[in-house]
Length: 132
Image 1 (tube, rainbow, N blue to C red):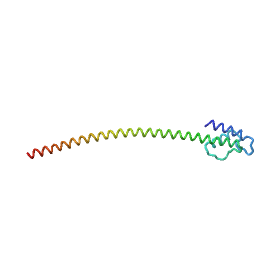
Image 2 (image 1 turned 60 degrees about the horizontal axis):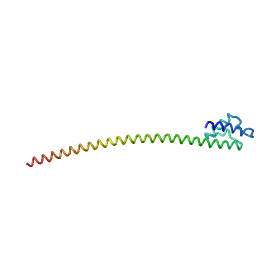
Image 3 (image 1 turned 90 degrees about the vertical axis):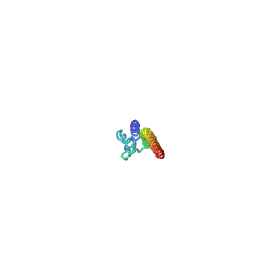
């Protein structure tokens, strides 16, 4: 992107030099213009007045918009990738805890069934001994 800004500044100075009412007449002004054009700030303090200056401005704008789009897409992909990794990690952790909890509940249920069976047997045995 830096190369595009520098080249755009140099080319617009060449395109605008000698044009009537040109306001981009030096490389420092052109560099400032290329930065504000690429960032779409567009203060309007400097602007091309020639056809070739405007063509260069259009190409600079398209290049900058494309570059910022690519950067934004890369950042979004990075954030989404990290979020997906976090979700997978979290889901594995939750799944592991859920399995452990389910096994603990099954074990407790078996113990309660055994105790209930034991109480039933005691009641049955007591009823058998009382009837005799």
